[in-house]
Length: 100
Image (tube, rainbow, N blue to C red; front, top):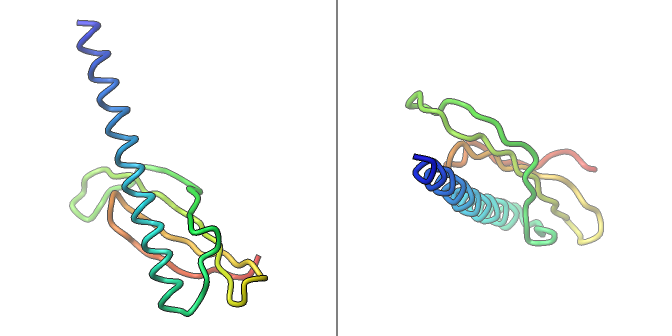
């Protein structure tokens, strides 16, 4: 019984890790597309996870709401913040925030 529980726990950890990687890749792609569409430069070509919390999706199922932040620039020198909100593996919203 302990080995079954341990196997289930390991499976859950692996699933969470893989979902987190997929979510991060989606957030990077979304931030990159947003910056390209606005004629901006995505700095460091990456996003950072700001918050993670449970929330119900449109079907009423529990999913993880992830908030990612990224930095962009209009001229390569001034850094400004943007964000991407993911519910599960779906983009809820993305936008450009005020200057830092």
